[in-house]
Length: 348
Image (cartoon, rainbow, N blue to C red; front, side):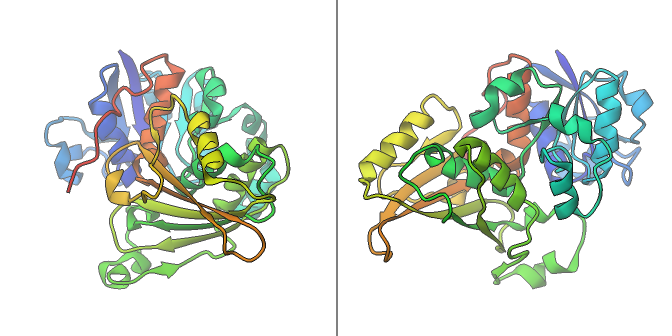
């Protein structure tokens, strides 16, 4: 059994990660940390864990490195910088769910996160953990930078066509909507019930920190420098994410041609589902699962040629966070890639 520890287990991503790992056939959870809940039963914080006697403990790395071989970090950005470096130097493998090791450029990291990266040499060693595009590198990685939720939905939607010559890569517009769990579990006025209920609003327009992450990976896929327009929105539901992506085509293309590209690109992928023509992805259809549902449409009335419209849906806490982390672990250790992740979404 692989021994794993979750550092920062009292947030939503940490609790979802614990839920998945407790049901994984090849894993033993040996430690879960939380500074504010240290010493308490996890069930005292999350009632759905009444079937486990695990307790939260303090983040004492010298003690923890003796307990596990793989460490999942669900810590705030900047905190993860030091923790990843310590664990890496101790010979441990790490899956970091923060943003600290996603960007390859320390300069870009400082520009968007307003703090310096103190371990920039490790940025080159970290592998961006989106299995559908980095699977081979993930397998042997010592540091996996788990992707952000918005980037997962946007990149998976665009990946099949980024290497194709029929799209105008200078015209990418991404409109994404997320449930409130994407903002985390810490109390904050903008995410209180009376603030979000019966309301939809855009936020961080042109300045959201996931922008350079999306641009970095799209640039990797297309082999050219990509800039995007990205607008996130907050919607009044617990979890789920829907992204609608618009990109102009350089030449007239049949929908069947684009569909073939998508089906071939994702052939054999266990968690990406290309929906039938005219079918719309819905957050309810992926809730509680590691699936990403994608549909594509062509707009022939958009003025200058055709516009490709891509719609993708994920659960922001699963495929957008903890589910991808478990998928990465499965790849790293040679487990069945779907192990612990095969549950179907509930209905209703």
